Image 1 (cartoon, protein in one colour):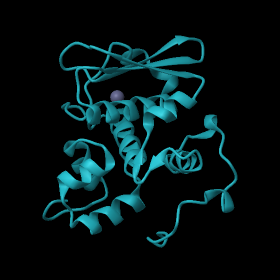
Image 2 (cartoon, protein in one colour):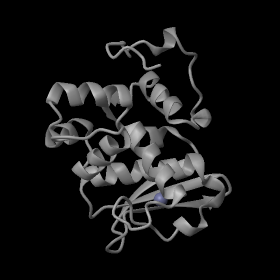
Image 3 (tube, rainbow, N blue to C red):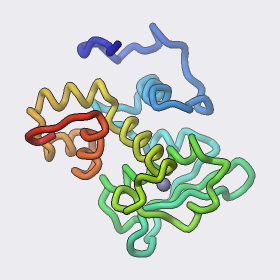
Length: 187
Ligand SMILES: [Zn+2]
């Protein structure tokens, strides 16, 4: 059953024990962790700060070749580097970071193909289950469901306003709306 939409999220420690950063294998745990750490400002998740808190991860902004959004690679045993294309907009970079973070959480034993870089949300093989998982995971942590539904109601489904609020591109916003089964005007 869905939680009451007006549930305050400010004091998660009352209901949940503190989460460890290496135990974030579901999007719910990632979101709870971000709330506990104060990484959600309003409704926008600070994915960069989440990556910075993880001692196994490092983040680089680099000018990648055209058509490539980001990569993740294991740079030494148990240490991973996420690179995002510095030529892209901040919002696009944000989704790319979350997508690579998802690969780190879900697929870290099988990353060799991603080390060369990949295109995210614009590719024809997004149906590929690994990519789909990473996109869903990214969308769920950047646009947590309760927040998303509340904001859609509040803005009347205005895509530009919603994208701005969550700090994501309109493409990512539409992806999330579709993912939650929303249709109609706006989202
Ligand atoms: Zn991917």
